[in-house]
Length: 293
Ligand SMILES: C[S@@+](CC[C@H](N)C(=O)[O-])C[C@H]1O[C@@H](n2cnc3c(N)ncnc32)[C@H](O)[C@@H]1O
Image 1 (tube, helix red, strand yellow):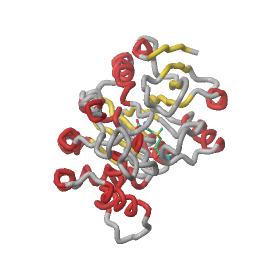
Image 2: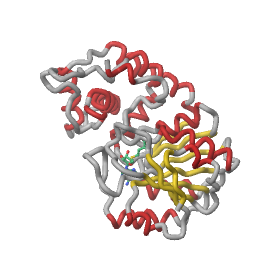
Image 3: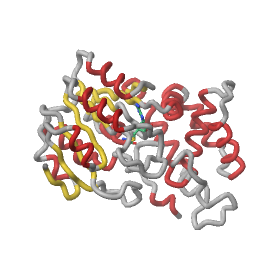
Image 4: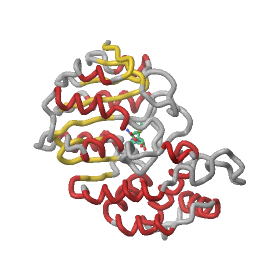
């Protein structure tokens, strides 16, 4: 069964194609290399937040600030933080079938303002776990007639998912969620007095399949680069490796590496771009085929 592949190495209850929890060995070493243990940690483009949760659970960071402009993703995190037990009770009693899939698809598509945040969070989670690659707008695992090799519940190991969500509850006082545009979020974090490390994983330059909210034009990537230059905290950005992006950060050190994810929709290399204040030579040994440029 496909669900055997799902195990506790994943901290996030959400599936995110190209998610960055796999660079945890690198990131944790980077924290040692830069004396960052115990800092606060902010992700302006958090998505599935797998890396942030891993850093928190392993006590590398004090608090995590996870931000995403996608209202449905934000609402999911908000509900998991504020109505955790109720959400787990719902999962416990849930039937994973095509009828429910059709219902939650409608919830997500409807503009009905009567839909509560709880209902929206349920829809996001249900579709994320039952659609191919976790793509909310995508097709159902196994197809509508369920004739495919894998069935709709292949990625819905209830016990494991409930465990992941209950764990978030244990750390809830150290998790802060927001729904700002990434650049506004950076400005807000930049004004804070406390120590912060900011990890940015913005929408890809070259779009893959319609993975998630991805409206970043060349102008937006340029604007982000200008704002990143104004950050006075330590930061790191990851991107797909593209000439246009490399040219946006001419003065910064970069590493090309290969994201270890066979199922990634991103084919090819990735880049990391470092703020001047970040040392990374020892940490890059934890990346696949790392090349400092
Ligand atoms: C590359 S994904 C991040 C994946 C994440 N690092 C993970 O491991 O799951 C980019 C995220 O940025 C969000 N996003 C898109 N445009 C945004 C914007 N203008 N401000 C903030 N978030 C945005 C998307 O909803 C998506 O979740």
